[in-house]
Structures are given as structure tokens and as C-alpha cells.
Length: 246
Image (cartoon, rainbow, N blue to C red):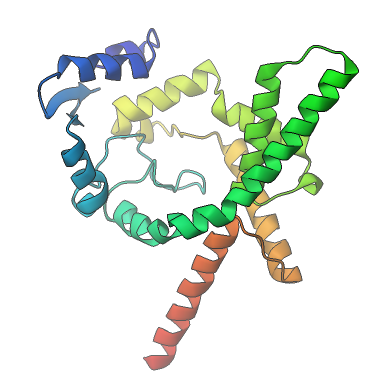
């Protein structure tokens, strides 16, 4: 197929997609092969809007990293397909309204202020400033506070280490992910996973601890995890009402 270079890990997949995109210049869309599976690349902004926003329920087979959803982190919008993806997208769309995003922006600003202070301390000490490390810590702080709703009591060093392992997979894990993209059915039969089990277990445990702490201590925060907790509680309340009515 058109993505054979990715299977042998000789070229970044973004370069292949850019080349395919440029080859379709003058066309609204075009086809290519993602491994052994036919795929569609859309260039026209109006068509993209229809597929992604207006008629997304009809385009649930998105051809990305396929997952059976056996693990917690694998059950997300990037890795599931079909009716499960459509259902989850409908449920999660209200969480990304302008008002809710603005509410979470304060957390990002707080992480930015901490980063500015960290840079100031490094400059005053007269040492070298590692820009990659600064940006990495800033990104990890946002992930920890905004997405997972954790704080320093959850061992930030270990958290950053696990995020790094997830975002910078080993060559073996990268091969498994590419295999999942290009030949998903074969990869699933071989037991390949998008995210290694020990990483999935760590983040799943982290979220469960944060959720338990909030529920036991009646704590609420303006972060994404709180929005998910509120959504879950709303769904549970609805199920209870339906059960009572029946």
C-alpha cells in the first residue's frame, strides 16, 4: 500500500500523508491504501466539516489505531470505531463547549505561571536552561492538572516518567502501533496493544485514586476529570430513574 515505509519504520507517517495530500492537489478527495485497507483522504474544507461535525455519525470507521477497548486507556475516541465511537462522541461533545473550555483555562494559566517562575529560578542560579526540559515539564503539568486532576501528592516525577514512556514509545512498541494501524485484525489476534499494560495500569489507577479522593472528600475542581465525573453521575442518575419507572 501507500504506507509501506511506515511498516519498515523508514519514514515518518506525517511525511507520507503530506505527500498524499499534495498529490491530490486540485481534487476534493482521493483514495489510498492504509496497509491493506482502502482509505479516504479529504482535502475540501466543506467536506471535512460535514464528515467531522455535521454528519460524523455516518463516518465512524476512521481507520486509525484499532482497539478492542479491553484496556481503559484504549477505550478512547482515537482508537474505537463504529457505534461505540458515535455514542461516546455524542456524550463527550458537550464537555468541549466554549464555557467549559474557558473554565479550564485558569488551570493552564496556573501551569504557565509555575513555568515562568521555574525559568526565573534557573536564570538566577546562572545555570544552563534546557528549553526542551522546560517545555516538557510545562506540558506534563497541564496533562496532570487538567486531564488527570492530580497534584504533587501523586509523585510528579513518576508521572512525568510515565507520560514520557507513553509519548516516546520504544522501537518495539512503535512497531506494534504501526502494525495496529496497517493490519489491525492481524495485530489484534497477536495481542498487540496501542499502550503497554503497565502504562495503562498506572494511569487507570491514578484516575481511580483521584476520583475516589474527590468523592470521599466532596472535592470538586474545574478540570476535565471533574467534567467526566459529572457526566458519569448524570448517567447513573438517569439509569436509576429509568429503573424506578420500570
